[in-house]
Length: 254
Image (cartoon, rainbow, N blue to C red; front, top):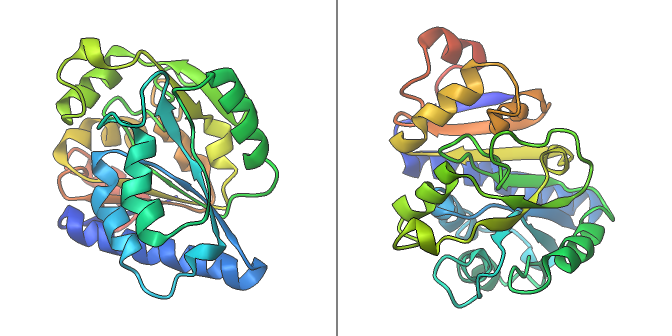
C-alpha cells in the first residue's frame, strides 16, 4: 500500500484521476477492455469530475460495477447512488456497459444477478473511499473479512447514518435507509489495483484508525494495507491526525 498526501482535495483528485486513467487505458491496451468498480459520495465528486474530463479514455470499452446502494431508495431520490453514477460518470463519459445495484428491487435477486456478472472476470481497478467510521463500501464495523460473496445485504450503523445526514443527503437520521447492498471486503480486495480517495478533515479520525492501528474488522478500511497495489490519496486535512512516524512509514508526502 502507498499513501500520497496533497495540499488540498483538488490536487489530490487530479493526481488520483491521472493514476485511474492510466489504469483504465492500460487494461484496454492489454486486454481490449477495462472492468472498474466505482464509489460514490461527497468525497468522490472532485475525483470523478477530474476523471471524466481526462482525455484519451475509450469509455466504450469500459465495464462499470456499482460499489454500494441503499435498499428501498428510489432512483429519483437525491441520495440514490444510481442517480449519482448516472449523472456524474455514466452519462458524462458515455459508458455503455454498466451494472447498477437497484436497491428498489428485490435485494436478494440484485445481489445474485450483479454478483454473478462481477465474478465472471477480474476487476482491473476499484475506486473506493473511507467512511467516517472507517467503513469500506457499506461494510461498517465490525466488517466481515471472511465472506467470498461478491455482494452483501448489510445493516448500517449509527455513525454511518449520521454521516449521510451530515453530508446533506438526508434531512434527518430517520430518513436514512437502515439496509444497503454492499460489495464485500474480499471482493474489493480482488481488484488488481485499488485507488482510495479520502479528502477532508472529517475523515481524519478514520484515517488514523485504519492506518495506525491494527488491521481488524473494527477498522474496515485497514484491510487495504494488505493489498499489493492499493494507493491511498489524502489531503493535508484528512492526514492531519497521522503521527509523523506513521506517515513516514506509509509513504512520504507528495
